[in-house]
Image 1 (tube, rainbow, N blue to C red):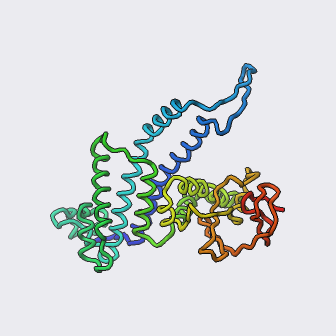
Image 2: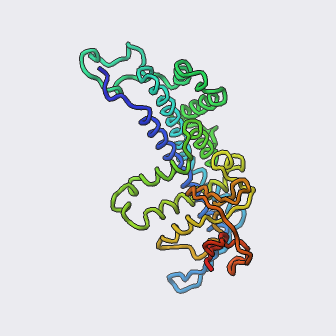
Image 3: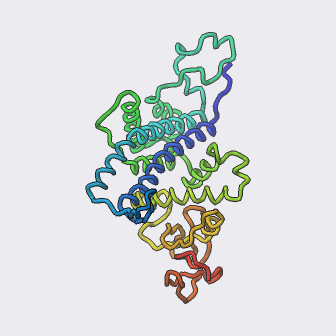
Length: 337
């Protein structure tokens, strides 16, 4: 008898975790590079006292030095990006396997000649059986599923391209592959959207809540746990919106980069619980956007929505007329009257 048969939910959960792991690797590269770029470009010019008592002022670097160091950074990041790509392909295969298992898990088992010895005598775990080859997953899925659920040519081409790319990365050291970090993020969003009805933000927040450190009861019980997770998600989505095209952001986040947006009052309230709250949020990412000129605003990060009416007066901090008449908070600067 075959035992320990995986469920569709288990395959989907594993696939989503693989996508999140790939996302973490790549988004952290982008976040780190932004900090490095700020330093090189002198966006935060600082004055420091050296150990010998001299006053040292950090000045912006030349374009040549910035370009040279940028190239060095992304060259050193190539392996991390490659690992992210292999994780995406593994996630796709798990998603497809989950859909096949939903119909019959036994369709994943390879030919009888490859079955474990004495499997007809002893109980054998499902994982001991050789699985069908990755190149056959699409064919098996499209053969046994309903016609409305078959993968279309666009996805099949994407799958084959990803599988070829993964094989190159796993079995050689290709010099002709140069994938940008932003492209990896787009691929993750495409795969996630192809297999789930959940928002990426919700799955991302769930993943961050269950990292090894954040899953510990000690940290979950701390007052800063939830705002810390929000702060990380806030940084990630801000950078994602900045780096990806308006059409991609609109499709996967329901956010229009070309339209006016405000600070989310719920996010600001939660972020202020951190031990290092921001004095002003005027230059922070505005995640709160009106839904179809309805007067109702929704945050793409925390999903909070609210009907907003504004006071007819300027904020002392930013001189904009974006003060919530109910809370007296400016949704541009975060300043409360």
